[in-house]
Image (cartoon, rainbow, N blue to C red; front, side):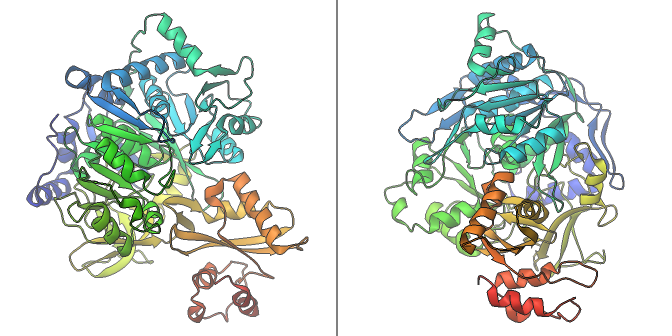
Length: 638
């Protein structure tokens, strides 16, 4: 299929960007025309960042799954929609055509309806990276249920927090999942979470690992049994629910600067238009290309660039269950050659990890099918960029260094593959339709180039969040209150002499660990719940693989036995309450924390200590007890 809104030259980009700024409503309406709508919109855009209230294509009616599946069937029914590469390389690959994917989504959508799920109900999905995860998200969208995918690495307590916040009535899970040499017992983790969630009515379980599990009568259902009931009735097509453009599509929880995760809400129409538009343009997708995004669907990258954007574009997606180092560090490259991957979209953490194995895992790998490389999740450092470009792309594949967030829905700043220039470690230029602005701490707009400031957006785009679930005030406070009438990203940024943007990291109390945003308050709450802990402060520090590591300064009443064992106990508490992704890399026991006389912890000082920059601590005379800093420096894990 052709993409009339695909830009094909630098001149196209310049013209589109000017058009998008001069007349945004006309620009986006012309793109939206290329999708299937039951009813066209009454207004392209109404917005007010003060409340905030953002509405795109208001009055328009559609179903996103008809754009992902139904509309492709006349021309692409037998084309491959999804390739599944299992964790074990000896296991058989699965391929689903657009027709097969359509059929399976319809089956599961009917299963959901048969079990009482209706439009507006919240459905939580906690599964491994298998085709059924993508099928489950699409089945929810087909009947208008709001899905909330929870990453398979989260703990029972983190799951319970999310289920309670969204008041989820239905859960979809697996018996277990494979991840390298590990088998993750997903159903038993769900069972532990549901002790706190009596409002959950049904749990649908897909058998994948054949792990022994507990199945409760009247609550737990086998996926296969429920699908068999639908098949017995002749596989009726489940009619797609007609949705308003501003109806919620999904809730995705992300960490913030407070201890409670916030549920970012994305809506049907604008999200569909933006993810498809950005996918086609950033990656310069061409008919028949195999697109391999290595993210988990439990994160926004998987939502936008494994499921919705590519399928709306009629692309072939590759879903990988495993990890890049199992059974060896050549797994990604084996997959690329085996499936003739054209686009590889992965995280700097993965690239840096694979760099550490040297070039031996690349021996005998052709990689000749690759056309575009992508980076996502955190800024990529220059060393990793050059390694990726030289050894994976063989110097001929453009690298798109994409900057965006859970809240933005899709890529906002990136070069476009082969269309606009790349610059190592820079996200480069905003996509047409995106209007970035830099401000200083006082809210003064920083004009011109060769400047650094806080990155904001001055105008809405269709893929942006609409609210935080059940707490609109929190949405306003987090994103729209810091700078009036602007969306504040929470990131610092440098704009070079050519106008290219380089993200310099978070400016709030949120860490970016291996591309996953984790609030320091959330980790501190977990640490403080451990017996004997009086208080803690968590900061980030440079980490060779993860980008940012987690450094915890902890005041403890007394160490029982071995101090190292106490640290392991605290780390285990964090893992149990949040998940392994939040486990501190370094824990330092301290007598006190550097505080102002008003009781505020001076995290700036702790960051410098964690970074090893003890000669740049600055003025400590305003602290309640400056001697505390000397004690911390002496015991620091540098």
